[in-house]
Image (tube, rainbow, N blue to C red; front, side, top):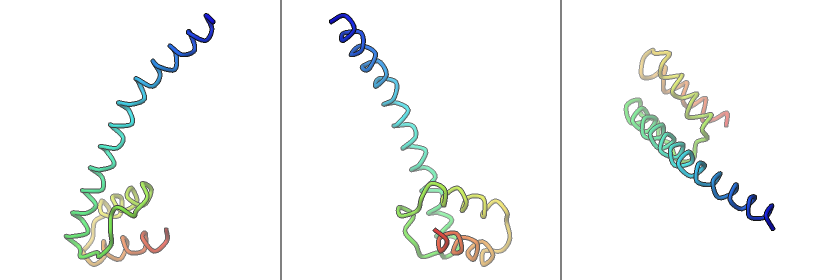
Length: 84
């Protein structure tokens, strides 16, 4: 009985720490999606940001950081989306 109570207390405390971390991660993902959406608007990419994976979003941010003309960035982004 004592082990059960201890285990339940441990699980409850672990979930209390996991909830804020999950919220923060979701918030960061939303911020990344918004940033990529702005880039899509700027360079003329017609694709939904919400369907992209986190890896694709990160690659797109890297493609933007490489610089170049809007057409260059657009081609790199379209290649990333095509190679999902």
